[in-house]
Image (tube, rainbow, N blue to C red):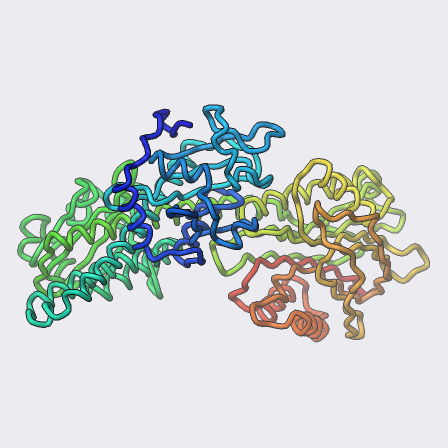
Length: 632
């Protein structure tokens, strides 16, 4: 087996080196139990590389432990330990290089490495049918000894892109840095116990040790706090809190470069920075970004001499004496600058410079990750909202829809609504009574990511196609046709929905509509009649899932008299953390009954505010249809 760079693995370390490696593994303090920090790194690999499973694996003398794990349910995952090291992870440890299995041969027992050898035949992970691709990057101690691997696993053959492997390597660098900090902290504690008496005899030395400990704790806290951030505002808040707690500056800003300017990350109640500081303007922070070096200024006079009166005025207005600007390292130059200011003279010694450089590295990785996540979320939201088209006018019905995204900007889901004319209306325009037959859908695809939003668009289009290809068959047949396609095409789509057909009742009826619907595991539609009676349409079947063999779905019918109001909704309206689902559905029904005569757009907005609140946990989609009374 070869590494990613094509070189042969280095020979196995001798006994002394191996003992030093094992001692470093022990000093991490990690064992065959879940560790919150390591689990976070595994989750990051899983989310950023979009793989089903990821591991932080450490190899001991007689076993492999998995303190970090995300997204897998294999037996060895439950135990967090294997009696013998995994072959692929062992190759990473003993070869000292990344190991990448791009694809598994069709029908092969274990996935074959890139050089074609069967080195993974004893690997429990490789033998598992759900693992068909592997990428592992070494995790090293300060001396370069490989303690284990940060691994990405896929249940389908795949070709790992250079960017994916680069992201995995960057995450491995951050994970390795945290391991080294834990080793250093453990060894420092041992030394501190042995030298406690000596430190008490030398107050000056004790103060220096306390300062060093505070700096080490800063890095330990930074590795933990910044490893799980996904938003730019959260990065700014975490860095502000960490630096303020340990170094005591009165001014902290994380500035991010983009479009030729530096903009600060806001946190708390601060207003967004709309303008920023041009990179070509002479300021300590811009010089740090342009020249990629730490810049320190002390006193207003020095600022005025070096950077001009305008910079000195800003310095004075902030009440600062010493300012330190540390660049945030990126692949193509600094991503931005970490700015810290003290209202007194402050000296940054060499150890503190090293700490600030490490902190800047953690911050840069967090900024990169947040920018990556925000870009993916923006794309998914734009795609999702583009598919939520305007409702067509329907003679004889009043209609309205509302979509409100979750309060968490990092979430994007598969909620949708739809309303469209059925084939009879498309062919003939309107029926003899002047009203078209229409289909209405509300649905929620499982997940809160780009895949969920993409699948939502496919499901929405496929349901429309099924309705057009099967005219006159009813909503149950249409949903069953979609489910057949979902299984046959292996889309892997799961979720819930209500699909309904509405047709005006024939003369001499007084304007009522006939509702026919099928429910695939979705919350019950709410029906409010003209006299304020609320009914939950609870008839339903199993949710949509490619692994569930569903027979032909059942259709249910109900007549909607004039004045009736039908609400279709997704679970974001009624399902809240710590709340009771049935209570929330009842509350929504009572609210609709009390305000059933209001215009539908305003009614839906007020309903969401009343039942879900402004900070909803999940996306919300609503579709309301009202049969007007004669005077409307």
